[in-house]
Amino acid sequence: MTGFLLHLAAPLQSWGEHSAFTHRDTAPHPTRSGLIGLLASALGIPRAQAIADGEDREALFARLTQVRFTVRVDRPGAVMGDFHTVGGGYPQHLTVPTAKGARRSAHGATIVSTRHYLSDAAFTVAADFTDGSLAQRCVDAVAAPRWPLHLGRRSCPPGALLLLGVDLADPAAELSRVPLARRPPHTPPPSGTVDVRFTSDQPFPTHADPVSSAQPDGPPTPVTVTVLNDEPVRLTARDRVYRARPAHSTTRPLPVTLCSGYGAAYLDAVTDYLRPQGATS
Image (cartoon, rainbow, N blue to C red; front, side, top):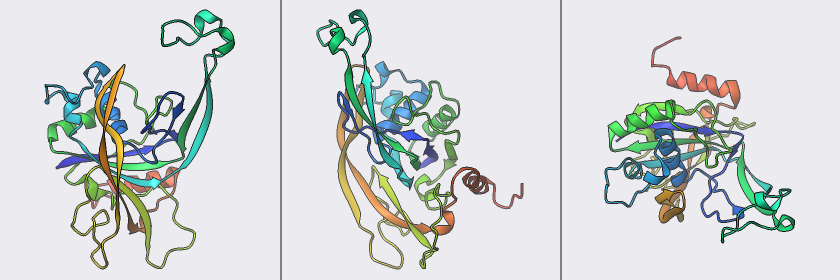
């Protein structure tokens, strides 16, 4: 395996999992379809080619669906609702089209849409590849994307710090070492650790590390398995299809010393993390 880490932080994110029509939800963490879509946008894959169930299993988008993601929740953020309207105040020939191809009347043109976002959330994502050449291609694309990147919705661009580590032999294991984008607790916990939430599209490994299913000095930590409808089959413009897949979630203790705060303090901690061992500048 090989891969890289992504840091997804911005004032707003929105990871729709069962959005439809005028109600747009957000999952509490990045969805699998959203992460694959981010990489597809970076690579410049057009929607007409965003097909995973076609005959060509070596097509670029189909290969992206083989990537495995583990998400660490640095900050869960707060869910924010946006009361949104579309199409109001226009003459009839400029109002929202109807399903029959006509136009709404001027007095009934306004459509109310409720949209949800995660405010001030931050996530660190491990992307695991079995194909090293595809991993490097994605790294290059994220560093210089073909199309603008967004965190679930086009109105949610990512922050400047996106790639945290590249060419990693075990990206998921790095989630126990990379700095946490959260403030340390006001009172240091006696255990010297903080609880951190993880979610993955694969079962957690069985070896003893902070994202394993067992701790070296205690009983196994519970893992919750739910079902999310976010495995992309087709993301074509007018025919978006997803299938259900299991989502594995758990909470693991990480050293409190990983809590690096916000802003410049976090960037300094990431700089130290990325600095080669033994380097002083």
